[in-house]
Image (cartoon, rainbow, N blue to C red; front, side, top):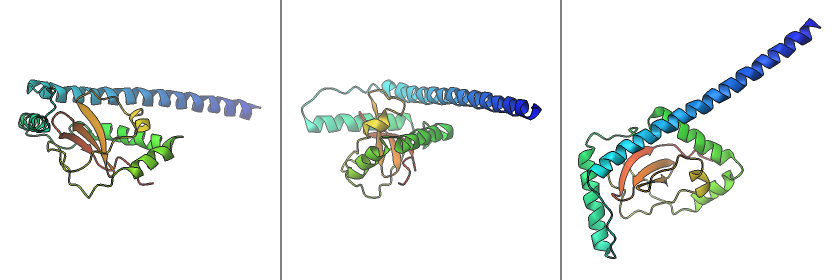
Length: 186
């Protein structure tokens, strides 16, 4: 009899510990997302301080010129920018966990199929604070995957190049940060 009581109490303790651990992980995820958002805001402060505004134009040349000016101003404002400034190790780990969960979830095969259908890119050497190659297509990020990642302000987008998650400033065509090996092999 005492063995049943002990087993019951042990089971209850394990369940309580599991619930507390799960809640702590959820709280930890919230802190990670908050850190990510703060880093995004810091970047946007630099972006806005450069005085960049996208002016409406029908001229492809004017639009390209605007993007180039924006790129140059932001690059000059972030001379020490490097990989991991936004996707810091624990933020990168969170993103990889979210991406993996999406790919393992009920819509995972659809997301993988969407990624496979995208226009293949050559082995690009992308760098933070450098422009995204102008002659290369931008692969869109599947909506199901976007739903599981923190929302971005309008100036930024997630893009996928091979297995790398790219954080792209669309007004400047500038790579803000990279997360290599974010998309696991099937």
